Length: 232
Image 1 (cartoon, rainbow, N blue to C red):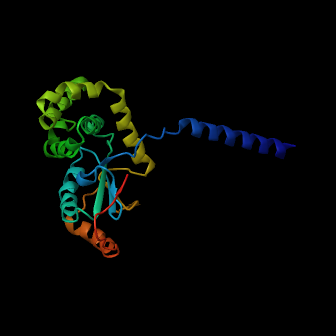
Image 2: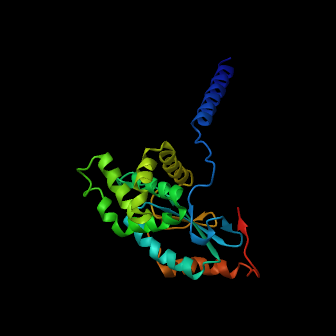
Image 3: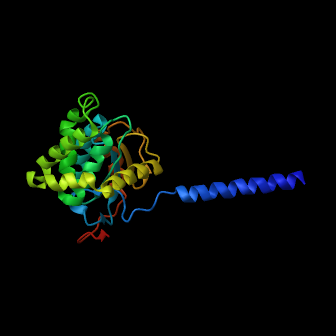
């Protein structure tokens, strides 16, 4: 009798736990998270190596990892596809707002997303914890909105400000963070190649390191003749 009661209680606990997990599941977003790079905005090149990068716009290591990766992308533009996922680190005070800014830019004009990311990398010291320590959150948002308008155009400032009031952009930034967590991302930069995580998470990779990863994959990829197709 005791064994049967214990078994019944165990099954009840498992059932309740399962219901809790179902209720707590993150809603599936309408599209895949992240920002495709340049020529592949309509989709991913079907025969390409797929690189996924998790970046925090105000992370120095994310900043330092971008130039060598961009060099590789430029060199093998028709063989590599890139998706950048914004991943705000909680110990960077303005990380979430800057990631949300990328979503706003992508919504207003997708061609400005990467220029804005590069602008953050170039001037990210302005948004470190110490320089903004005495600023209210509203002041930081206003500061970043004006910062964004330098990339998107001064006339876009009202739309940018409206973007920060739109709960959808807040949700999009949250989904990006939750997506990174679901992939086991613990810091930035964090890279996946063809779905597999690279070692050394949280540290930049230089050009030679990227070539040591990419070259063997390129050598095993059949060279296609004619136009490449897009996965849409």
